[in-house]
Length: 277
Ligand code: C2E
Ligand code: CA
Ligand code: CA
Ligand code: CA
Image (cartoon, rainbow, N blue to C red; front, side):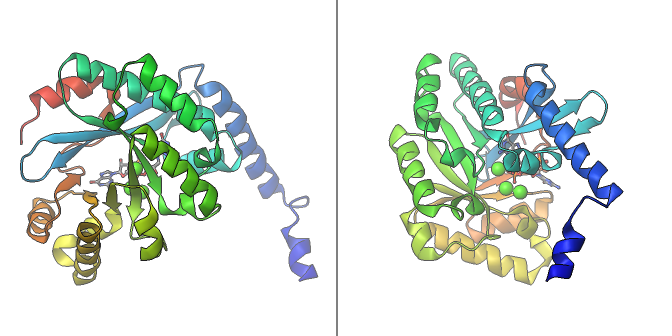
């Protein structure tokens, strides 16, 4: 053990030092990325599989870094969570999402907007109040906003997270459990959550048309969701065969490259108006 403790020390490992400096540098820059307008929002539609209606759009962040080029969320968000700088980013995303909802209402487009919320955000007591203010300021119905949380967001401090979810649900926003099937939520715990939808992780959906295992897992999730009165959204729908199979299995909503890759948030109202498939 002492051997491991020693070799874990970063002091004598040049590669590790530069790696850590690199990360620290990136996070210092993230603090300014918002004000310097380097963060851009994309959106990806969610489609009702039978009616073909656009139900919602999920907002996804990207970072146009001046030197590193385009960074995807997986390249900086986990670090941002660890470093405690995710909440200002979330608030910025929420405001843009609510502004888009106001725009959609003005254009008489009935469709929701979904925002990803990190586990750290759920521990911020002021989240509910600031969200309430935001919705009032832009005169947006809370039910138009969907917050997507990962199962893992509830693991660290389940009691506190549950209290927060209840407050958010009282506010009237819709809650979705993201990446469903990859975590370890017990069914008993799931029943207690004030969520209205689960999103089946794309890892089960990509090859649904030719994987018996993934068909079994997805089928079990759809059945469970029906029993608990949750909507089911399948993520990562790329193939028409997968869509056909989802419809046959009783899944009602899909999101994926088959319908649209994520595109600039501003283009969403026009996209919805000209959408046909
Ligand atoms: P997620 O919430 O599971 O979002 C869906 C991801 O799957 C997106 O990746 C999307 O581009 C990708 N995707 C959707 N359909 C398909 C498909 O048919 N094929 C393939 N190959 N991929 C598909 P993206 O934009 O890179 O986002 C990655 C993750 O970063 C998201 O996963 C989410 O957990 C996180 N994220 C993105 N934006 C935010 C944000 O504003 N706040 C927080 N906290 N997390 C965010
Ligand atoms: Ca999501
Ligand atoms: Ca997901
Ligand atoms: Ca994911």
